[in-house]
Length: 224
Image (cartoon, rainbow, N blue to C red; front, side):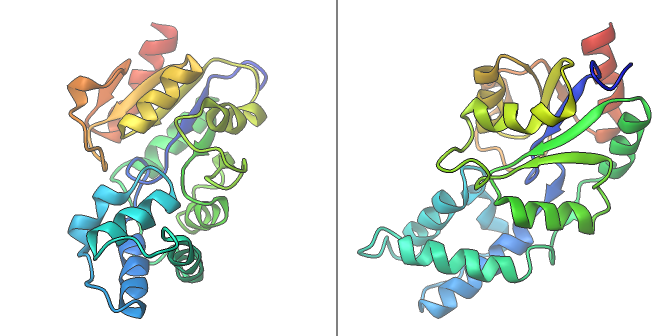
C-alpha cells in the first residue's frame, strides 16, 4: 500500500501499549507524602487512570481525604512536576507489543498514539521502549488545549500526519471506545488494561486477548 492510503492505526498508551500504573502511583505517592495523606497502593491506583491527569489527581484527592479548597488545582500542578521528573521508571510494555508494532510497520501500516497522558512524558516513554519509530505521531492530553478524549479531535489530530487511509483505534477503555465512536472509525478493544466497564457494554469491532492476534485482526477488518 502507498504511504498516502496506508491503513492508519492509532493506539491508546496507558493500559493499551504500556502498563504505567507503577510510575503514576509513585508520583501520586510522593504527592500524598508531601500533603501528609495516606498513600494509594499501585494495585488500586489503576482506577484513577484514563480520563486525564487532572481527573486522576482529583480522584486521588477524593480517595485520600477529599478535595482541597482550591479543587485540587495546586495538587495537579505539583503532581505534574513530580511525574515529569521520571515518567519512565516503573513502566513496562504489555507482552508482544513491540513485536506487533514491528510487524504492522513492515506491512506498511502507519502508526500513531493518542493518549490522555501529557505529550512530553508520552514521547519519553515511547522512545525509552524503542517504539519511535515505528510510531511516528503522538497526541497527548495537553497537545490540544482543553481537549481530552472522548473528543474525537485528539484522535483525528494524531491520525492526520499518517496519511489519508482508513483509520482504526486500539484501546482498553470505555473512553477509548467512545472516542472511536465519536470519530466514526473502527475500534479494537484489548482484553487487558484499566477498563472499569465490562467489555460487553462497549462498542467495538474486534476484541483481542493478545498482541499476537492484532496483525491478523486488522487484516480481517480492512482486507477480509
